[in-house]
Image (tube, rainbow, N blue to C red; front, side, top):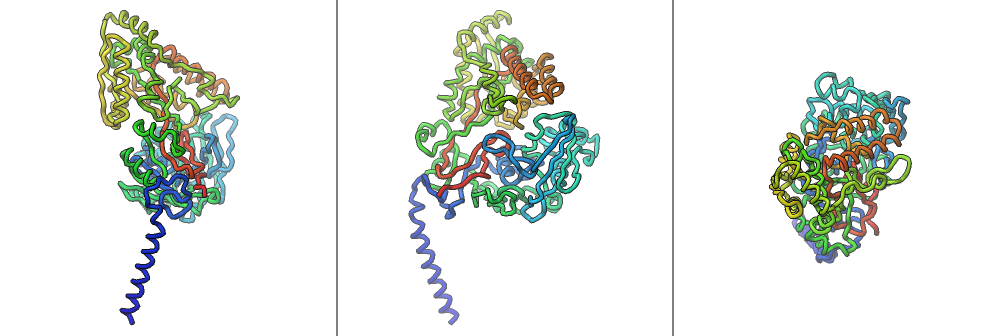
Amino acid sequence: MKNQKSLWVLFTLLVTLFLAACSGGDSNSGDSGEGEAEGSESGSAQEITVSAKSDIATMDPSLITDSVSFQWAGETLEGLYRLDKDGNLSEGIATNSSVSDDGLTWTFELREDAEWSNGDPVTANDFVYAWQRAVDPETGSEYGPYFLGGVIKNAEAIANGEAEVDELGAKAADDYTLEVELEKPIPYFESMTVFGTFMPINEKFAEEQGDKFGTEAEATLSNGPFEMTEWNSGEGWTVEKNDSYWDADTVQLDKINAQIIKEISTGVNLYESGQLDQTELNAEFVDEYSTTEDFNVAEKPYLYFFKFNQEANEALANVNVRKAISMAIDRESLVDVILNDGSVPAEGYVPSNFVNMPDSEEDFRDAQGPLVKTDVEQAKELWATALEELGTDSVEIELLGDDTGTSKNVLAYYKDQLETNLEGLTINLMEVPFNERVERDQNSEFEIEAATWGPDYVDPNTYLNMYLTGGQNNNMNYSSDEYDELIEKANNEYAQDPQKRFETFLEAERLLLEEDAAVAPMYQDSKAQLFRPSIKGVFTTATGPELEFKWASVEE
């Protein structure tokens, strides 16, 4: 009887597998999956599979520095606020906030129905612990001292080892009231709290996990829309709907699978075979897919620009040289031919579709108008004047940039444009790995750098405070007393006068670009991608996850 029963079970199992294979055959036929309600072979109406360019480095919010980690921490964690599809603050763990008349003390009322995925309540202490941990020198956080230092009271002193962590200006008045003291009024402080470094951490869980915290699925804890359930290093990961999330009724996706795809062509093939629902494109594939309904362009407020190191090369100390270089490059051809990914020519240093003027819905970029342009004839005139001022007929300048495929193409384009349009100029390309370029930037080891910058919070200051004399990100030896004074006024004297503050930023940007040509904006980035038309409600954000999935769904 025992052997007969085993044979019957085996027979039944084989029949079941055969029938399942037959019923699933159509989904493996190589069809692109266009308009499929079930996503990529998911077997579930609300399951999708997306691409990731690299592995997650860490899910520890105190230690995250890369975009991939920020993406998935942003889906599994929630801070005081989230950004909605219009870039506005929407409710997160905070339900209400108030600020003192002097702008120094913020009080946040927290919702009492927020839970961690282990059932613990989300409390004010989770924020206090996380922020103290981020500025504690023993943690070794890169972004903690940068974001909290000079913002939250005593954060900088703690990061420098001059004060104890419990002296940080963040206190839990009770379980659901968070009080924050600032070093000075920060008009954009609420916007900063969207950033990953400000996410809460469950103290008990983090301490139990120790060094493992945030390094594997079992060592993560969620209070956001999704929770990580699987993480295979080097391959991909899975997040599933977090039923403990306070707003779980809004979340429609049951599961998101992320697959690491390093080659664009691989991603395209997997998309075509129905194994991916989203993948990035480069110029090679844009023309092929640009007329299909799967084609999507996600505009981002990321600026690509030239940094001019005025002490590294005598010629770059000449303002006419810098102006000539900026005007000599055809930005339209750059984005239309070389990039061909939806990127647009830069018109200023603060990107478009990033922040509006405080008294209207007018975009900051529109209020300012274009401050950079391509004008080859004027560039040649400025160049001739510069050579005369320098007492030479030839100039040699090194251009530093990344060694990736797209970057190499862009650098070659810059070299051709500059050497063709500015007679006597020789551009020597220095193409290095990303990490090396960042290190050279930090050490001012460049002449011209093809640099990039994305916002840390939704405010013009995240771009314009970079070039204060001696500033942390001013590694190109630019110094202007007038510029310093304008940024100082915007962030101090006019800190609580939004209109004057933004008008001062407009003036500072004009000085930086039109008068001093301290930097040369080239283009504003966009990401061309394939995205299943059946997937709705996914959007990009300025400072949160690159793609926000909380409101996403797959249409039946």
